[in-house]
Image 1 (cartoon, helix red, strand yellow):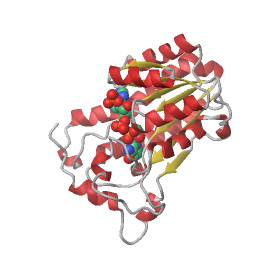
Image 2 (image 1 turned 90 degrees about the vertical axis):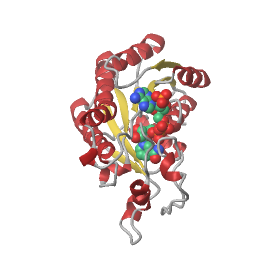
Image 3 (image 1 turned 45 degrees about the vertical axis):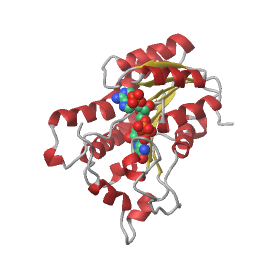
Length: 261
Ligand SMILES: NC(=O)c1ccc[n+]([C@@H]2O[C@H](COP(=O)([O-])OP(=O)(O)OC[C@H]3O[C@@H](n4cnc5c(N)ncnc54)[C@H](OP(=O)(O)O)[C@@H]3O)[C@@H](O)[C@H]2O)c1
């Protein structure tokens, strides 16, 4: 049993599929009551029902979303102990010289500003007085340069630093950590993994549950003396990058042509 999650309340953004859905499931299995968000209302309703929890349909880019989600969790469950900032976009895709500034701003709104707004709302509504734990989902790719993912990587690198900054500002009341996944079998990364097997030191790409276990552990009291940390959950991708043969994922990012948006 993961310590310190039974009876706690968790808010997970982007929790209707992929990594967020696995996080919400594992938190619920550990005894937490869970509030999930995502944009598609029908998917939110289905996910909340399956978890025995509650849900809010909305876009994290909406400035009102953070307060609405926190208010819902507090109104229904009376507390908010864990926040998992998981929802993100990997758009726009392409060389930085071709990027439209508006699309760049949208990436930063979803991947950086929205997590900050959610932490602010959770802090003001509950955590400043009662404490809590935040886990931000970053990416292994934020640690180095990759083709066509400049906006995504730069915004996630900002989220990584935001994690450390918040950890400093909110201690000792609130712990703030991140996980940095490598390639995981979800919709967001389908265009990479469906091109065929990837050669990683641990022999396979990640499943959402691999990342969720790390998120849940960091959120729990098992990690009570850890803040400002980033946990790589990447099957050894970073290690592979240092070896002859290079970084297979980059070849796929280089050759992929996204559908017109
Ligand atoms: N998969 C990977 O290989 C990988 C690697 C490194 C890091 N990550 C990170 O892991 C996290 C989860 O990604 P994933 O791969 O699980 O993605 P996914 O399978 O595409 O799931 C994304 C979830 O977020 C929701 N969502 C997307 N945009 C949203 C928005 N603007 N507002 C609210 N909800 C939104 C989606 O539902 P709706 O579409 O209905 O909104 C869905 O529930 C992200 O932070 C991503 O950057 C993934």
